[in-house]
Length: 220
Image (cartoon, rainbow, N blue to C red; front, side):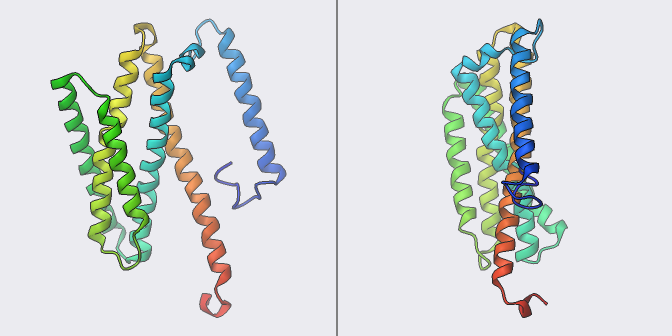
């Protein structure tokens, strides 16, 4: 839906409406089946637990941001700053380095103090600050600013994702440990898929509107 909607098909087109209706039907069927299954994929009573739902929502939103930056920041560097794909990839290692520092630092703090509640908050604030900095980037902005922003983003995301998984595991009964961990990982993957598709649709729509606003001679 997010891939085709607004690009290949109008949001009000029969194709998109049919896909949304199919999603609703299959989702309802899944819930009904899980409520009566002897060994369900997910115990629906887990959805009543505040920590479980909050952790999965945070994981989902975090993955939207991570995958969107991984996909579209290199595109920006190549299209706007005329950087080669290789060099754009090298610049993106700043994000990986930041994630390693954030994840390792969070793990050390948790092992020493046994506390982790403040880490996702701090990590989330760093991620939001980095995204805000990226939103201010223009054609004249130095590449070093982009690298610094994605480094800070990596540090923040390193203190969120793994900590959310740990929180869910600590809050789960032993018999549900594998189930809750799998659902959290699914939320992460689903967020990445949704984020890339959704922002891709937004990007494509804005690109078309700006191209249509240009005189025909400038497009030749």
